[in-house]
Length: 76
Image 1: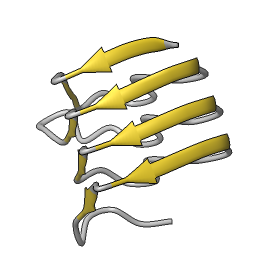
Image 2: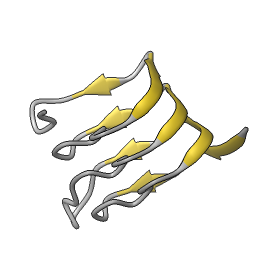
Image 3: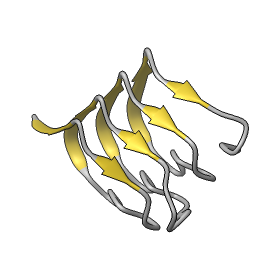
């Protein structure tokens, strides 16, 4: 399993179509205000992350979201 850890992403579809990946301690927020950062992902564990972008997890398959925060800007 791949690991993406302690990074900040704000661009649109920043982690588009990733597969077999653990995303840990990441922040999804910023000036670019991108959406669909984790669109069409598969077999992904999202853990201890913070989301402040629109539609962060769209069309994902076999994902798990643990101990993460989604604020009022996060929808769908």
